[in-house]
Length: 320
Image (tube, rainbow, N blue to C red; front, side):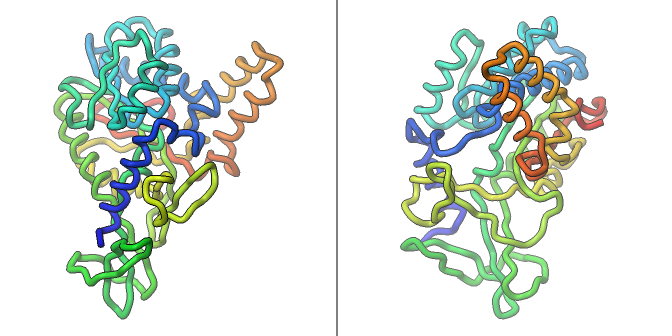
């Protein structure tokens, strides 16, 4: 028997170790190149707001196929000096995905690291798309007027008494805590406060936290049993943006705001229109992809954007 967060960490490590893990789902960078381009320009403008340091770390957490960074890097070239100052740092633990990213990012000044804590010191601009949702969660369920923690054994939940202090709630309530995300936020608070920079997180979850079971598994673009065949599906949970920002004590937090609003402010729709005009045979696909990213009924409302940055920096682009 193991705690749910230990089970989730083990299952996702096995899942992402596969060479073809990313075939099971599609993320924003694969839907539209304009997504990565907008984030690249966002990073370049943020670099200027930081005073354009002569050297900084351009970090991506969980770089997937390398598509986002490739698009961001290309767009960042529009801002003089940005590429020359950037040292690309990719936080990735899967050797299979590192190889895939290396192919997509050939020629970039990139290095790989096992964790954000291993990235060398210095000012940093951090991009993270659908990274927090894959970090392991603990789950607690209220029963008989007391909280019990969920463990996993033989493909089923087993609830155990817990001494963990938790708020009052009615029976049947489920509370999720992401200690890994909170630890990352605390690390970023110490680093960015002392060395400068900003971190942009785009992920899915409610605007305001509450009770509920958000654990889910995705296999072959369809929902699957989260506890069956660990390592065969991607396990995720909604991000508690409020708790994450609170754990980054000392940083300025902007957002969360809906992804659709954020991307529209960055000009994604206009960029998609330009791409569609230059490739008329693919125009329908390009425009529908952009619409999927910004429309409330698509990814525009469920997904949120949150920026954490060093106090005193100007409000980052898109969060005005």
